[in-house]
Length: 472
Ligand SMILES: [Fe+2]
Image 1 (cartoon, rainbow, N blue to C red):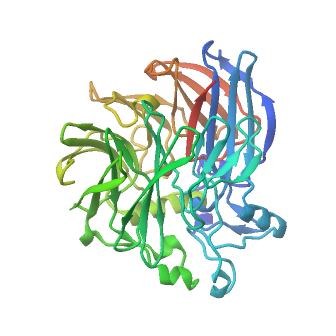
Image 2: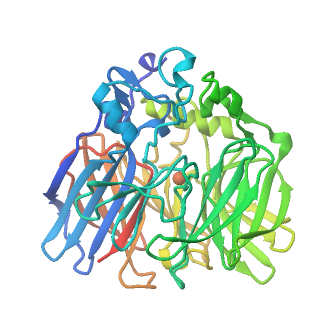
């Protein structure tokens, strides 16, 4: 199928496994690095989608590779390294895929998957801590990396994760207290959502649990003032088929709109559920943010009409083409904190988007700007990836666009504040320029009005998922 379709410019970035590079000074292509920009941008994503002549099953199955770009008084340096998980090392040695994963069973007969846990792809996001960087993947434990050179230090249970307890890739930090909140879906005879609260070093201090009647896919959640909000989509996994090796996670997922979306409100202080309620069916990967307002909660999410379409869309990306458009749109939900009931819902922006980001100090609080990747004008249905970044201003209800140009593809825009608790600062995005087959880092002002600097990265960085900024 893929070969019969026109190969878009973005597909070159993932046509072959990405090459690592050691700490390298970056050349300035245009502009100047902002004088006060000091710290490190980290990004994680699938670095390779092929092994030994085989293709990974889904974009989510690619082996995680992390980019670090350090900004200091001497300029910008970058390095790019694969996360050396045990599964990555075994597959590297064999030069073959060996393990089941989200979108693939273990190669060979179905019994090859028996007794094998999925490979930890370590490919989804990063969490910079004072003395280490965590590479995160929602099906397993974090891996710790060196903050400077990104060498893998090993799996990390954060002094509290049990052997089979995953730690999801979208932790939320309460900037006021430094507490880190996260969850993990532990699949089994009794599937449950484990809740975690860590101190600012990452050490788990408190845990909670929410039983689920059936296994589902929960990718993200929201901190909203004194609450955590989880949305359980009407996707159900057939664990028996997965364990038997008949199906992978993606292949066993069934869309059951009749079940609706379950809203779960959790007291962030005690990590105990306050309310569970049901509402309309939809699917979301990502939450932009949330806040508590008296007895109400406001959250904003990137919402899809269903799961199969967006899952198929993301699968196609890894094969270098897109024929299934999946439009994620920014929605605002108003919830009753006591009952979990949905009080009001509205689509607030008509441009298809993903990877919503808010300034770190406003996570869990009322905020003004949501940054995200968006499509260029009228390009949603043309087999294109996102070609622009946007700032949705919640006060003026306007979307301000920074278009990357024809054949250029941004990653999630990351906010680097000029000072702690400041909305002033810069937006950083790693861009793949398909015209020149190279990757760049572009730096914008926080209003997205001006491109300030463009730095050349030494090698192509494949399209990635999530990143974070660590101030110096
Ligand atoms: Fe994500």
